[in-house]
Figure (cartoon, rainbow over the protein chains, first blue to last red):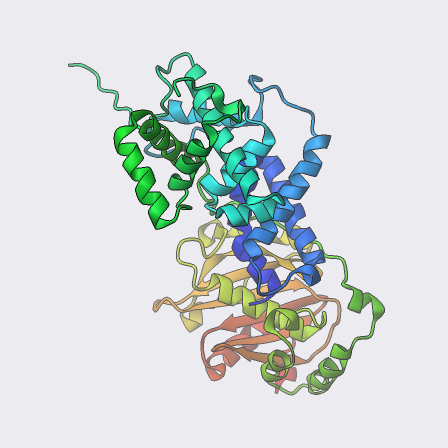
Length: 177
Length: 276
């Protein structure tokens, strides 16, 4: 396998992480493109024995932080924000819960969001996440914990949701005969 | 801990919360895990938190499914690496040896030379010549031919759209030859990053599920030479014509692939007579 082919293999992972991080499919596509380009131009810096996925996510995350400064901040309650225009996610989880989750996710500070996505979504180990974020493992742990507690609090604020629990349930709407 | 808004305060409760997270993330040792589970049995608040954390993870995965069909716009642009800009490198010596036979209309197998001289992932970047081109085609075959769910980005039932799209991306009017007479039907195509710009990969499949790919990209050096690259049971015939490089790959014997490649070469305006 060539280096390029290895990168191609990780494209879906990069794209998923980029989408989750930005909440914006267009921005995510650009990020993945930029990441792949940068990875290819720096291939000599990559040690073949090390973790290519973590290396790619590191580059992606670095570019994201760079670009974040250039992007206009979008108010979280802005109806035109990309994540409010994302198609409703399919699946077995209550769509309303996911909407709340989506909104809450982008209200997290970026350093909480990125660690939550690396561990909770991409299932990186704490050590891998620490390497990607270039912080100690302890920092990963405390940021992650805060992200989760922060999310619980945000979800508890949602007006139509009682209690603090984010429940993964299936809504079954039945019309009464 | 009955205040859900204590997330921002690193307080005495934090170590407890870290353990709950670590439980969810499978980061605890066996002993720590057992102790934490014991605690959950009596601490309903902690148990609820763990359930919430797990639900958060589940929601994230539901929100962000792995994209499977959205890579069509990816084009990798690469600056020439230093050794190309410098124009000389030790590697060129070995490439020169391989290129010699290629300049004549002789079929040669070069894979052993290429792959034997450097680590695999390094070998493919030794030059922009035909061998590298063939390797890219060969690798693209290895990556996508086994793919069951998404072997192509655009399926053959949208053939006109497929050809238009790839022609636009490659900035060249592309033709897709029919391989029906050999029992291979077009499955579809995809866009891939090539050395000097985008590349198109068309995939064919026969009734037995065996696949061939035709890899097409701009290739400036025009030469009548044709090459054969054999690697990992895959064979790739490659040639160039009028500024385009072509490679036909398959996990089939050379003798099986060769007549098909000859036909494809002819169908695409090449000169298969020079192969003999």
